[in-house]
Length: 519
Image (tube, rainbow, N blue to C red):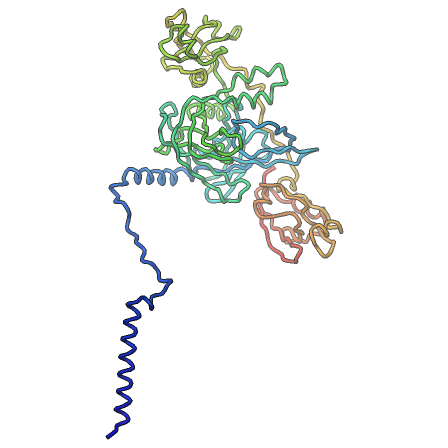
């Protein structure tokens, strides 16, 4: 007897069995596999920790050094008088920093910058002379994004060392000094900088690693800078001979904006100040140079104590010994400073040093080249007595010399301070929003006050103020004319925050709060 329920059950059973058999066959043939299946990611180390331990230890050391050093590295922004600069030529050796472009007429103030590092808890900061020279205003940015006005304590163009200071009521992180005399070729070093100027904060706190490539490099860069300042003055031309160049060379990557930042050893001690590069383009090509910290420390101490450098001198004109000199004068090695002349009435002449002498040591410390002799002497004070080891007539003799003070301070360029208007301090120019300005800035109505120019790197630019913004309010007061802007800004003291309400041409308004820089 036919049972319809039983027949339906058989059909369902055979249909299901057929489906399972087909599914298994398709799976075996790969028909059911997704072409976008996620691969299994293997996260196991390719090498054991033991196999990479030396490199891992070095990497960890770099991390630890960066953690300790970067809080004491600062960004420095400087406003300088505008100038017309001849940028013809393309020098190989150059200081770090933005290129100044040729301008016609009376140029506006310039904004430039560099790096520096805090050396004491009360706010003394070391940087380069060329970063702060001619400064009208100096601002220092800390790791926590706060910024403060800084005073220039002193600046020395003959070593490219400067000291500035921020006066704030707190203890600041600072870096210890190492001994650059013990820096060895091949030694690992880190170059640290804070080159955020002109880039927002995109490049803040750059740390690069490399080795010391060479010591005692003389580039001629300081002499060239001094000649540009004094070369046309016959009374000052001899100042170029007082430049001290004894650079540490490194292959750690250093680019514009790092100038004045520290070069540190693996103990986190400063052994040099990043100062110059060798490059035909102005950007890093493998050759960076730092001022030895022993030299910088001596200069720093004088700048803090006296405001200028009390530079000791022997009073000789010299050059580094060549192989022919060593052979002729019977030197034990191709090493020393060959005296080419003596200053009339100077310490060397009074002590009996003469042309053709070769100075090979100062108080028992060897002298390998002329720059090293300069650095040895700089470690002393005017009036100190030193013993020079001199080769004369193919044999060594010792000569006692009482050092005098180099005549550099009355002629050295000084950092300038000028009084500026509130507009200039903020870095803005304003004008009435007339018909022409309205067309240029795409405003529908010609009324009110518009920002016509913003100085790059200024306090206003840092906070995002740009040209073609209409000023609606300053400190909650309506603005209708440039005179309103002037009165509002002149009423604000240095350090206070100014609150702007500005409007774009499409009607969008926003608040911009800017701190008033010092005069």
